[in-house]
Length: 429
Image 1 (cartoon, helix red, strand yellow):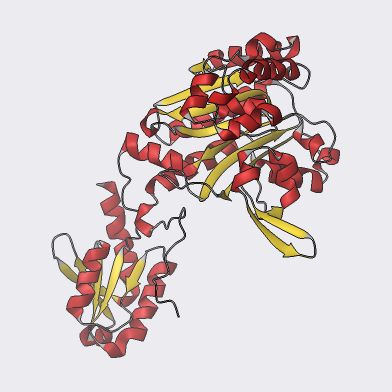
Image 2 (cartoon, rainbow, N blue to C red; image 1 turned 45 degrees about the vertical axis):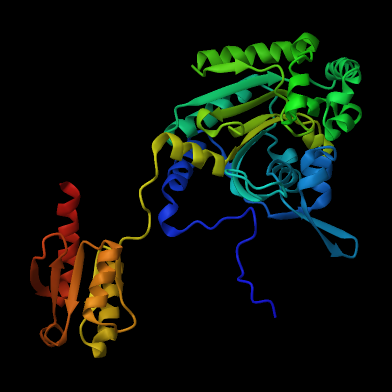
């Protein structure tokens, strides 16, 4: 038998009770603003039919070619741990026939995603996203809404050092000319590209612009941009979006080489970056995907959305805001039992305190009073209830104020009310 200690898998992490400060700040900002903007929460399965991501995310993407966790479920069934949320949201939209009953929908979701990639800081194999999908409108105003929403969430979570990059990658009418222009330029320098990008020139040439390898980034810097190839409709869409971003005071930059790494994007693509994160500084990415619903078997339906990388955003919050306050539970009261025979009565008292809205804890092992007091101190409880034979006999509770050591007795039945009063006084200071 292998005696090697069992550890967490590479690219996963444990989050302990004291480490939830920035998580909760980001989640609270998102939940409040998503409701304010009219987005309804959906929850989709972590596992999906593999075909959903091959057809939706795109079979030539790195995600599908290299990064998916796929399981042969037998009898010809292949399932995949979801690597992203958008195809699942669209699958749900179609499966529930929302395109027939209420075509315009605004969804949001949050949860774990899975990709087999090289783990590094802020980039894990199990990671979390908060995402939105606005389905059923081609309006550039909706593109602007998702971008403003993402910036609002980050700012409410405390982030200010944001950099917003925007591009238009055209539509099926104008993009083919751009692809041909890229191939014509890249054929002459194919030898300077990485092995993956040499294949991409023929299979999905826009992905060359997204490569993170230095030689490919140098080549991409000299390639033509999409702006010169946009059709009139795509150019008008871009102009409306940019005008709205200016009106909404969103500071943005146009990046002609921004394409994002997913096949389904059309027209608008954008990223939100944070200056503290170095080379991998993207904390949110999104854009328009007007062909995805049709690609998955539905009618032509325009859509736009984004996904925030939670772990990357948390690193940005830590860099800009400092380490979050400890979020480990701190009971208002720790009940210390001096008499092992009174443990059951002490448990009843703890239950009464909790029913009155006072957080309470006790020691269940009948350890020494000194050990119990040490634990109360470690937990940071402001008050202790000291229960011994005398208190049981007199139906009273001895309250100890941990800040200054004061002690006083109150009737057992009034103990919860008294500590509630003390906590109210403390809150008003």
